[in-house]
Image 1 (cartoon, rainbow, N blue to C red):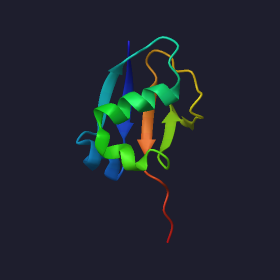
Image 2: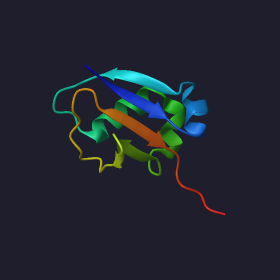
Image 3: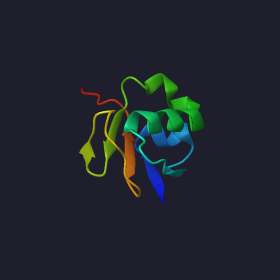
Amino acid sequence: MDIKVQFFSFFKDLAGHSEICLPYVEGERLENCLERIYAKCPQLLPFRRSALAAVGLDYQPHSHLLQPGDVVSLFPPVQGG
């Protein structure tokens, strides 16, 4: 089963997709999945320290253990005005 990755806001434009699928890797943590995402979409690299990552409906630490079928969502940093 795959991991679905969704991009939001201007991350969609940078990535060139609204979503991608990555093969599930047993024992993979969110931080490793993010590395694979950045390798596939290097345009997002400048935002790697400030991007927000959620798994399912909740923001998760980078140590979060992924499960088959998880949905990872990437959001740009929150900006206020």
